[in-house]
Image (cartoon, rainbow, N blue to C red; front, side, top):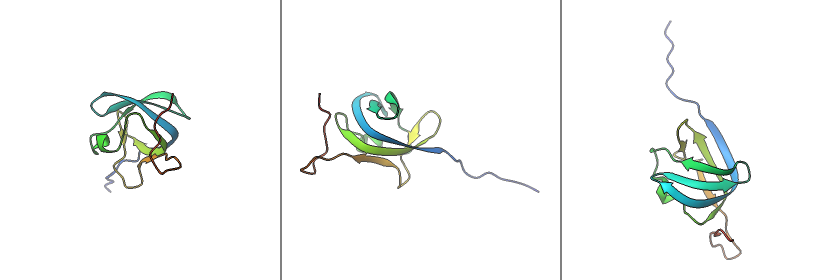
Length: 95
C-alpha cells in the first residue's frame, strides 16, 4: 500500500480591529490588533499583498493562513475587510 499526502493543512487565523502602522520591507508591515497587540505581518509571495494592505488604515477584521514564515491571503475566503465610517469611507488610523 502506498499513501500520498498531496496538500498542506494550515491554521486559519482571524484577527480584529487591525491597524496597519507602517510598511517595514517588501511584503512586511507592522500592525496592531485586539488579539495580539503589536505584531509583524509578513505576506506570502503567493498573492500581491501590496494591492490590499494599506498603511494608515483600519481593518474591521482579517483572515489568513499561517504558513510558517509567512501569512497567506490567497484563498477567496481570506483577506482584509476594511472598517468604514458613516460615509462608507475606509477608516483611517486616528491619533
